Length: 81
Image 1 (tube, rainbow, N blue to C red):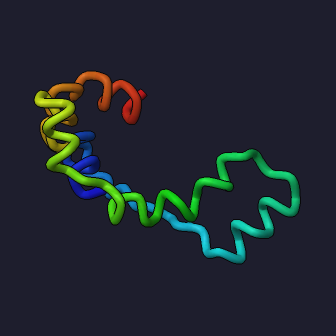
Image 2 (image 1 turned 135 degrees about the vertical axis):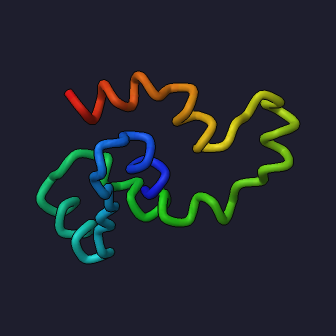
């Protein structure tokens, strides 16, 4: 989030708000969009990611910071418009 805040460049601080398991269960029970079904999986996705294998498959894979630099125009357009 700090890298995204820096890329936006207007001094704002971007923060992530994570839902508790209870909040997810409640949203699902209320018929909220399926996006909530992946909320708990996304929390631990990095535990199951093999970066060496990703780099082998995608040699041009970049860091998030490099992505933000490359897409700086889109980042600013998204957050500053």
